[in-house]
Figure (tube, one colour):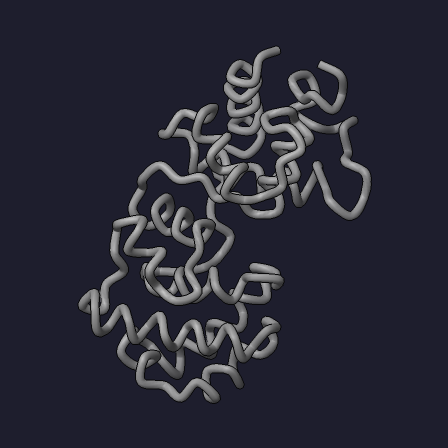
Length: 211
């Protein structure tokens, strides 16, 4: 099975299994997703969703968070780990949004990358979830699964994986496909145990099981 054919088959399998898959970070404004995705580094989305409640209660806007003392931000986000660097990036990011973008999150990929603490993964998540544009989010689940399934061959670098997937995944399917990989990676094609191939909806088209 050629990679393009396998990719289209995997899209359909995952679509049937996880029809309503979406971002597991809670947000109701674009800037809040920026904050949450920074906090999610080496932390679970579930914990981030709890921690940000206190952050937004105290700092309910871009301007409020931009004016906050970094130490105060750090005290709140510390349970997410790497509190100092995350607080510093969030503060700098909010200041830049306020000063350079009128307190609005830009819908341009390169502009998003210019924000402190925002890399390609975060920028793609914003583009896909907030603005509904094609986006490939190469998080750890995505990288693990597309290697196992045979869409890429032993590539672990996130940007290189992203570039390979752009060749295979139709743009209109890209964002949802990546969300479904997260669901599948947590429930079935797991990292810390052997993947549960016996109950995998993708078994018939997955390279790992010999197709």
